[in-house]
Every structure is written in structure tokens, then in C-alpha cells.
Image (cartoon, rainbow, N blue to C red; front, side, top):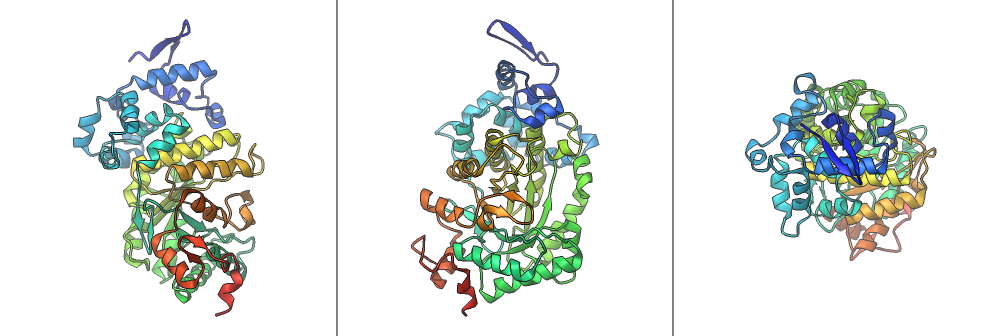
Amino acid sequence: MLLRTKLHGKTYEFPDIRLLMGKANEEKSGDRLAGVGAETAAERVAAKLVLAELPLSVLRETPAVPYDEDEVTRVIQDAVNETVYNEIKDWTVGEFREWLLADTTSSEMIKRVSAGLTSEMIAGVTKIMSNLDLIYAAKKIPRTAHCNNTIGTPGTLSSRNQPNHPTDSPEGIRAEIYEGLSYGSGDSVIGINPVDDSYGSVMRLLEMSYDIIKTWEVPTQNCVLAHVTTQMKCLQAGAPIGLIFQSLAGSQKANDSFGISVEMIDEAYALAKKYCFPAGPNYMYFETGQGSALSAEAHNGWDQLTLEARIYGFAKRYSPYQVNTVVGFIGPEYLYDARQIQRAGLEDHFMGKLTGIPMGCDACYTNHARADQNAIENLAVMLTAAGCNYFMGVPMGDDSMLSYQCTSYHDAPTLRQLFGLRPAPEFEKWMENLGLMKNGVLTDKAGDPTFFLRR
């Protein structure tokens, strides 16, 4: 196949789909590190023009890792609805973009077509979309899920209560949980990143967070973000777990570096459906981020956006309650500055929604990246406009354990007010019953964690 175009009197030719896909990306430091990024803006435009003319079938036939070498590829390919695929396989990538953005294309139409897509097809169309395209298209694809409450319904914005502590102090974490709840943070999950992910430590944190949920009858779920094998051991021992967590990658080799496999996540999913305390049916929580496969030298020479799209194809197998792209956490080697972080956040959110999973975003940055608090607030505003399901809620926006900067407990309420959104419906009712919210607005009681100590 000839992958060539002429632009301003210069001919650009790309040797294969792998390099075409890399050079069609918006600028990313990780793609330069991998040697697949465009050298100039003109080369990037030329690659986008060539990509736009490719039939979708070419991208399905060119997975980032061959089918017989990679179990993630097999999960993605085997899940394709062949009837739907055959209806769209001759569309060009450019025609697919136009169809997604058309006013006459409904949410239900997009959801049907998503069943016939592979991750490489989704990555391809993402590369030729502008930021506004990604916002508009994602807004058209609401994705809901239910565990102990409902996430992602139109008109809502949820928040993960992230009460991390540098020593895993149960009382310190309890105080942070109370503060978050008082602001309306926690309708996505009360999710703790442990310093010590040993069995005993994880069990203590699960029992403590569950005690709060039961005592205050909070319509939410808990999760301690230890390795999935530790959580499985806790679940089998009778621990009260709401969601099972694991970070995922977009290739088998990268997942090997995380100490996981498809078989292992299959086992965890089966245990979750049997033993997790909420009603379900969605019990899994996954985290992702562009650059994970490259950092593990497991990207097979492909760009980080395509490998990220493959994570969502993998995650879809488990009907997750939520998926979170920790977009600025991996560092400037992969996303150098605020512009690259913002672009990646919009890409990830759109790709996840198009794949068929409920997406949230950790709008964040590390202290050695060229970004600041204004930059992640900008990203949070754009993602809220795009219909993002949830953000993180961290005390003062500064995670004392993970040492990165994030959205705070009061950012989600501000975004709700700005866009006329509400918490998850069950959670809003709970807040109203406690006098923390009235008609979708926080009351004078909100923001005071000592409220939970007076009963």
C-alpha cells in the first residue's frame, strides 16, 4: 500500500502503518522518545491527510502487536461484532470522523457502531480530530454503570474521594474521607492508594472505609488500590470490597511488567461478581495513562496513543464501573507540558467513551512537568464540557502520599455549579437527607468534616 501525499510542493511518504500512525499524532514527548513522532508540523499534517484516506479495515488488519503474539490483541479482535464491522469496514478514517461529528448521528447509533471497532480504528480517528472535535464527540456518548450507585447519567458529575496518607494512618484517612464527603466527593468511589499494600494493611483500610459507608449509609463503594492479587486474597477472606482495582497496559508484555494477565483479571472479575458487597453489576475499576507501555519498553514500536486505546479495548471485557486515565501522572518524558497533557486527556476520554466504557480523568501533573494548577483546571473544564463521568477529589489538590498535583474536594462542586450538573442521584439524595445539599447546591454545613463527629 502506498502511503504518500504531496503538501506544499513536497512529497511525504510513510513506510508503514506503524510510522504513519505515530507521525499523525499531535506532538507528544513520548512519541519523540520512541522515535515515531513527526519531525515537523508539515509532516504531521501530511500523515493526518494520508491516514484520513485509509479504510478502517486497514487499521483492523494492522494491530499494534500481532494476534498470535499478544493476548490483548486477541481480546480486542475477538470482541468485534462482525456484522457491524462489515457495515463500516470500507469507511475511510476521515469519513468515520465526519459521521461521528454529524448532527444526524445519535448516541445510540455511535454505541452500535462501537461494537464493530478495534482499538487501532478508534486511535486512528482520534488522531485526525481537533480538541473541540474530541469534546463534542465524547459528549454524544454517555456511558453509565452501577455498583452501589449509578455513575455517568446525563446531567451528573461524580468525584472520587481520594484520602491518601503518607503513613496509611487509618484515623488520618478517616478525617480526609469525612472532609471529602462533606463537599460531596465520593459518589464515584472512596478510593485509597496505600503506601503499604500488604494483606494486613489493605484489610485494615478496607474495613475502616466500609465502616464509614455502613455507619453513615453512604450510597457509594470503597476500594484500596493495591495489586489485584492482594485484593483477591482480601476478598476471599471476607473483606468488604466495593470495587476491584488494577492498572492496565495496552500490550501483553507491558501487562507482564505489571504482574497481570488476562487470565488473572478474568479470575478477579469472577470473584468480584461473587463476593463484592454492592448490588452491581459493574465491579471493576481500572487506571491507565499514555506512555505506560513505552516506559516498560513494551510498545512494539508503536505510538503511545494507540497503545492507550488498546487498554480500553482490554478493559471493556470486564464491564467496568469506572476507568480513569491518570493523564499527567506518568511525567514529562511522555507528556511534556500542559498542552500535551490537556490533549492526551481529551483523547483518552473520547477513546474510552467510543470503546464503550465509563471514563473519568485524573486531571493532574507532576512537579517536574511544565504545567500548573491553572492548566489542570482548564483540562477539568474541557472534560466536564465533554461529559466526563468523574474527577479526583484530593485534600487541597495536593496528594501527600503520591506527591502530585490534582483536583481538590471543592473542584467537582464548582464544576457542577458552572455546568448545572448534580452528583450521582443516589448520592445527592443522601446529601440532602444530611442537610449538606439542597436543590443541587451545597449548604452552609458543607465543607465542615466535624459534622461527622457530632452524631
